[in-house]
Image 1: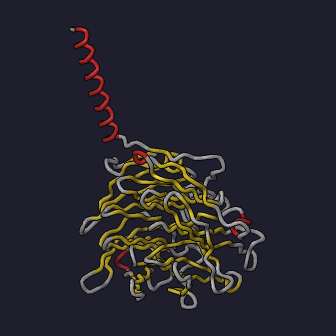
Image 2 (image 1 turned 180 degrees about the vertical axis):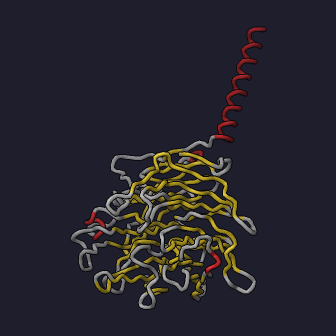
Length: 403
């Protein structure tokens, strides 16, 4: 009896110790979950990310595919299927670019195919070899409908750099060269039911982006926010309302911490009553501006963060994925993420997340890498860099965290 009692005491002590260790690890060392890579995945696996309920789409434009995951038992992501461009399409013949941009809402998956160095498939004069198309499919009940291409009414447009689903419509950026070196950009929208393509902003009016930085978009419900590189005097964006009205989001010089002259919004986000703009200066520095609408109806900056990149948000948490961009002058850039919480009058940085092997060298005028990206998935973060995608709990993250 004494031996049995002693064994029970030891077993209980071991169990308590094990639970204590798990608790300490959960508090001080959030556990990373790596989403599995497979043969054929490229270093651009994770270039774009989109999540909707129990489905996660991961773009891999280097392998010319989108990988679909399904959330199964205990919240684990299981690799489900590769989504490929239609046979015979320009993207399929090019062999890369599919999955450059993604959006996934209510079972609709929008896929941008985009690449800036496709020889032999260009629709413009050399040396500007570009490929860009937009595709859409439906993901439901563990099945995927055939991928179909969005057809444009005018020839010469190159799309796919950015896509956004809003209401029952799909918006996407499109560009073309009206002459060698003369790039113009516009935002187009298509009705997913009727298939009619319409012009929103940009060319044939003032082009909304430059050869250095393209425009990005984000949507919430029926609202669509479009970043504008050339809106005067200091950049900004356009907010497309549910009734079709388009409202400019214009910035003032007092919005910026930097003394550099801003040249436009490189990335944007709309969440709750907050608009987020990533601003690039003429000297290639980046800043993130947080804006709210004032009583007078103007958009007013209430906080800034001295970094920029791609954005995502969930409730009051905002995620900035820091990446280099075209024209950036630094010779070496460390990739990472900044998780912030938005209060009524300011923002608080909760954690700075860095990739241990996240140093990218600038060689021959190009970044040959996959930039960081990230999305907030309920109480976890999905983060990507250089062909790796990880999941980590957003709660209890230390102020500095290394992957």
